Length: 192
Image 1 (cartoon, one colour):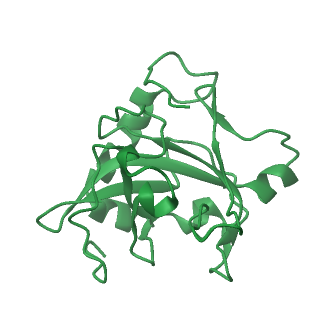
Image 2 (tube, helix red, strand yellow):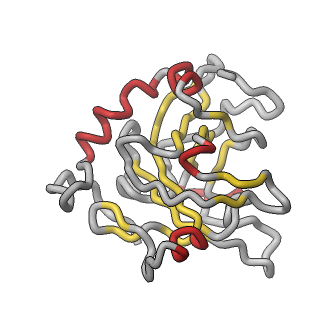
Image 3 (tube, one colour):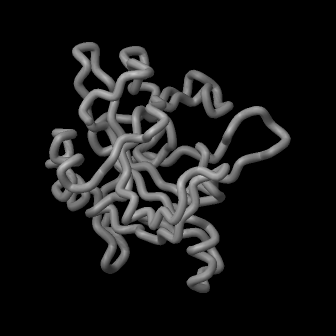
């Protein structure tokens, strides 16, 4: 289900979209993100909907930069990335998403939080986390398919927030048809 953007008052203690925008604006410069501990996805993947088994017209996400400490990553892929992260504060998102540009630069398009399901449930939570009343997406690989629906991660919950690129699918949708990976240079990691 796609949700339209709204800047309605957030539940108590939860930042609204304007507050998240203000807190993350500095990350438009990927060098700032790197200086603050974000690292580029080591696999250097620019994620598209069709790469993850969704209709191509849904669009793309882009290239992910993440904070290992906020995700609570406990081990590299073996075979999947695992962690104890339960961080949900979008004022300091665990993941930043960038769109590769024709000149090799990166443009910030969205922020994201990812919470490992096992860690979340170990804290006694019976339901996935929410943001602005919307339940995070549940991600788990289906071994019966050739795709990796969980992006090489153990089962988790995630929520995208498209603050820096209008998204006709909705501000909280996983993919954005206005984002492209056509300028992505696989095998090169710009901005590192």
